Length: 462
Image (cartoon, rainbow, N blue to C red; front, side, top):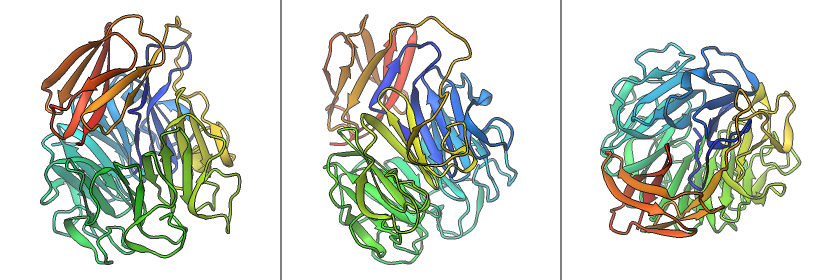
């Protein structure tokens, strides 16, 4: 259900022993991290992708995904997907409703390829269903469909992907427990599926088996589906929410469901959002601070308290965190990534979801241990860290290097179909890259440092 693609900070080069996390995804009671050396680590409760259902209190190497050219990891409630650089989709985990998409209801504990899913650029998982976007801008869905969350106009479960009706120009998807969301390249949002608390944002509580446009708001840059509520981020840095609000997860200061979008109080300059499975929400500000609101029964807000009566109906700052670049959250826990590549977690520690090597929960952030470690001491190379912003871009983005590169960096931009659209060589700090001649949509930015290649997605939205 939750994922993070770290589009802001990357580390080039290999460090001895510690290799920074670059992409992190969490859901349920488990977490995944893609490391800068191409390996994947996982921790927490079951279905980690290593061929067993065993839990792990600290990160372990997922051998099945090592050197597999994985572009991103996407988590559902108890199932997981990996998108490879070749656009193929691989899944594993809980599969009782066919949410893995391999044509069975048998749980695969190691990655299996999803037949027919090629050219995939984004994916998402809910409680029992899954979504994917192809590079032709179409959306596909499979798994549970009792509330119309597959968007094919029926309420019939599907063990393999079916196309969602009426959607074109889609660049991203997100899934709540039983509802679905899609972001179009014109900044509009489309929703479908379960709507018991207004999580579709269309002013009523009736389920909808086909996508409908969310009215009243445009200029949307990010979407986040949660259990019974939804979040959207506008291009002005404000956050809006709708749906279930029994724990204050809408963040507008009062309880009670919202059938249409309501602005989250006091948040500006937001760069990332996430809605989590049991009633809490998170936002990341451009200054590197993290803000949380909603349910705090298990300490998932990170404010040093937990239990009944500690929920928050408006955002509060996680005061011990600074310099953060990404956020995510699971069922009863939360996660944030720092600009040095370290990962911090807090909340319940079911099955080892905090990744600290113990079973102890925490109401304040604690560091995930032994994350992205190599198997042997290697020669330390200089690292090159940079910031790419803004993303989404309005026609121009900038690369800001922490240290001057030791050699020229080659930059290329590709369409999702693989066509090279831009090429330049980066020599200096603070390099503005003009891409105003490219149309709105999703692109792949590639950096070449010697024999190494690094890829990140960027959205152009004028």
